[in-house]
Image (tube, rainbow over all chains, first blue to last red; front, side, top):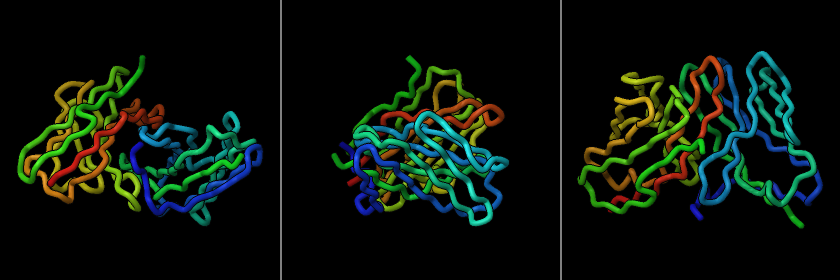
Length: 110
Length: 114
C-alpha cells in the first residue's frame, strides 16, 4: 500500500483496550474539528467531528474531546479492534481551509 | 454508489511536461478540495472550491492550477511539474459548510516527477 508517513508517532494497544489519540491544533479561531482514519493504500475516511461550541461528542465506539483552553483534541476508541489499525489525523478548519495534523499510527496488538 | 474518483491513480512524468489529474464526485457536493500528502508533513491543502466557478488557494498552491466549470469535476493542473511536486494527491468533496464538513476522499494519485 501507499506510504502514509514514515516517521509518525505510534500508539500500540492491546485488542479490547481503549485507545486515546491526541492532537494539538494551532489556531484559536478554528471552529470545526474532524478526525479521520487512513488505512494503507486508501484515502482518509471521516470518523467524527465536533464544533467549537461543544467539548465532547460521541459516536459509535468513538468519542472526541475538545479543550479549547489548551487547543487540544483527543479521539477515544473503545474496545479497540484489529480493524482500527490505521493512521489517524485530526483536522481543524478556519474560514474554508482545512489544516491537518501530522497523524498518529495506531497499532492493535493481538 | 457515492464516491470520489481520481485519474490516473499512478503517474510518472518528466519535469516540465504539463499534466492534469481529474477528480469527479457523484454526490452533488458543492465543496471540493485538493490535498497533497508527504511523509512527515501530513495532508496539506492545495486548492479548494466552494462551488462552480469559485476557487481559492489553500496552504500550498504554488505550481498548481484548478478549475471548476462543472459541479462534479475539479481537475488539478500542473503546468510545469517539478520534482518537488512528487507526492500523493487526494481529491475530496463535501456538502457546503453550513451543513457538514464530512469530506469524502478519493483513492489518491501517486505522482512521480523525474
